[in-house]
Structures are given as C-alpha cells and as structure tokens.
Image (cartoon, rainbow over all chains, first blue to last red; front, side, top):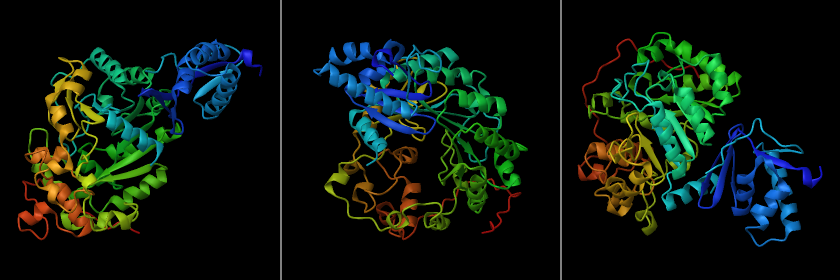
Amino acid sequence: MPENCIYIARSSAIAARALAGEMMVMNSADSTFFTLNEVASAIFQAADGRTPLRDIVRDRVCGQFDVDPEQAQADAEQFITELSSHGILLVSNQPLSSQTSRETPR
Amino acid sequence: MSLMSEVGQKAFNLGVPIAVHMDVTYRCNERCVHCYLDHDDHGELTTAEIKDTLDQLAEAGVFFLTFSGGEVFMRRDFFEIVEHARRLMFNVKIKTNAVMIHEEEARRIRELEVDSIQISVYSHRAEVHDAITKLPHSFERTVESIRFLREQGLRVTIANVLMTVNSSDHGGVQKLAAELDVQYTLDPTITPMMDGDTSVLALRIPGEELPDVFHNPSLVANQEEYCAPPKPPSAQDLEGYSCSAGHSFCYISPYGDVFPCVQFPLPTGNIRQQRFLDIWNFSPQMKEVRSIQAKDLTVCSSCSHVSSCSRCPGLAYMEGSMRGPSTADCEKSFYRTGVPTANMLRQGLSKPRTFSGNSTPLIQIRPVAVPA
C-alpha cells in the first residue's frame, strides 16, 4: 500500500486514557493492554480516519518532536502495523468512518 | 511486575483515580440475605447527572469503570449510560445478577464492547441460590443469562460469596463455572449493612472453616507463599499504604456521594455539590485516608502480619477507626498462616473470637457435600 494513501482510525472496540503523557489502550475483545509513549500517543490521538498518515506524521510528529521525517514515517508505519494486528487501529487506503471511535481520547 | 501493575503503581504514585466503582442504583430485584444495602430509592442521580459525572471522570483520568448496584438493569437508562461511558472510551465492567439479561441485552452488551461481566452465583443448587436471593427461579434465569452472554463471546466471571449457608458449595459452583466456560472467583467477605447493622455478620463462615478455603489449591494460587508465616516487616513495609482506596480508586453511590471505596463508608463529598476533581484532590477526608501509612496504624504497625495482611481500612473504619485493625482480616491472617495477630495478642486470644450476632438462620438450607 503506497504510504500517501494510508488512513488510520481508532477501533470502537478499545478503551483508552492518557496517564502522565502516555496513552493506556486496551482492546476489550482480548484484553490486550498497551501503553503508548508520547510520539505514539500523538499519532494515536490523531487517528481520526480522515487525516492521511503522512499529514499526521508531518504535523503531529515532525512538527512537535525533533525527528528525521523519513525515519518518522517508517516508524509510524511499523507502529500502525503492530497496533492494527491487535485490532487497536484500523488501516485503509480510503478514509474510514464506521466502526471507529469518534471521540478523541483524553 | 506486569505492565498493568506498573500502570496501577504509576497512577497510585501520581494520585490519579485510574479506577472507579459506580453504583447506579441500590434498587434490586433480589433480596439477598447477606446484602448490606437499603434498596429504596432515596433520589438517584438522573441520566443527565450520571453522564455529566462520567464526563468529569474521563477528565480526571479514570480508565477502569465498574458499574454495579443494586441491580444495574433496574435502571431503564442503563444502556444509555453504558453507551455514554464507552463513547468516552472507558474500560467498562458490569456487576449484575443477570436475571434481566436475555438474548437482546447480551447482544447489546457485546455491541458496546463491554470488557467483562461479573455475575453473582451462590450455589450450584437452585434451591440454595434461590433461598439466598429470595427470588424464585433466579438460579435458572441467571444461568440462562450466562449462556446468552457466552454465546456473544463475552467474558464472564462468576462471583461466589461464601457464607455459612453455602459454605460447602464452592466446589459445585466452580464446576458449574467450568461447564459454562466462565471464570470463577470466591469472596468470603461479608460486610456490615450501610446503617451499621452487624446482624448480617452472623453469615460469615466460621473462622475455623477458613483454612479449608485458604489451603485449597483450586481456590488459592501460590499456596506456599500465601500461607507462609509472615516475614518481619522492613522499614519500607512500614512506609507503605493499605490499598488503593483514595489513592487511585474510589466509589460513587447512586446519590452522588463519593467514598474512598465501596467498602469504606467515609463520606468525602457529593458530586451534586462539587466537581469530582475538587472532591478527589481537596476533600479533607480523602487526604486523611491518603496520609495513613503502615507505621501510623495503632495496633497493626506492631503486628508481624503488617506487610502481608489484607487489612481493609474500610472494614477497620466500620469497626471504629480507619487506623485500627479490621477483625475480619486479623482472622484471615491467622487462619491463613497459623500465626496470631497483634490485635489478638493484645486481647489475650490464641485464636480469633467467634462472632456472635443476631443470626437469621436459613433453616431451609442444608449444606451437602459436593461430589469430588
């Protein structure tokens, strides 16, 4: 899948909450529990299903943290692959709306 | 330490209320003999008030949210409440007797991605369960509901409160849980009623029977460690705290009262009058609960069990002092290890005193041995 077409959205099956800058995420289907660091949390919170991943990386990662853009994009793709395999994130080459959480986790 | 424990410890250290138990009603369709609640409605929070409370809890950092009662499904708006909670991305657990859960309700619970459901089952024998709940056919209905929930792939735990009238039935309930493919948990704690009436304590299983529970490998994992004589407390142990009550956990009643725990009836504020975070951060009572370290306990600080005891500050509070001992936990520590507690020794007791309250015997229940 070309990187410029990737859209990501949080699954509606998850629970999530920020704790001291890190995001706690749990999938109710299998009770897998994750904590996301600050950069991963930024991507996760921006995963609205409408914003392309490259824009999220540019605005929420490169714009906020001192990282190389190419490296950031590669890390982000690895990160979303891992979370999508656990049903935490939905990934598509088209904007996503259904079965996603519209609420931005606090 | 597991990731979950690490996060729990972090919340504790930061004073973030990561978990809240919320009773949405005290009304109930059962009348369990050991229940500590007044089932009349004295002005429950409205749907709007509960939703506003949930908004505040999300803002405060609450992640794990348990809805309980009373019976949660006595509220017609219960699904609306759960829906709002899930929209706010809480991890939601439900405690229920399940008799009002049919196929449609089970499907709705699954759609809302509820984490798990804990259901009270007192016996594998319908006549014993129904005599405890005082609701005819409740056993049959509860078990049928568990099957509906399992058909939806939901995680279910059977909670088996152990008391005099069902003390021989835990093996049967365990087998039932295995047949239904659900988890099983046992609790031998009977709590005084909300108005202070201790008559229900007569239902606590006699201390002499506790070793059968504590030394049963099917009920308690890590037997050797759990039943080992206590190690001398370290300086670090004496700097420690009893539990998460008031540190990273609290309880909210159907009337909006906030307490450190469901088993700790110390009022700290009401969400109809104050913002939740103002109560959590600034209530003098909450601060006092938070301040108590093991070294501050009047009797327990000198007890050899201090580092391993399950001492409940709420039960201690109900006995007269949140810094004092909780007799029920002294009893558990003794019967778990065989070593007398400081509370017993100061009273010159070599074994716990048997509780004598005004009992209401359930003469229709005759414990029978459960086939191996």
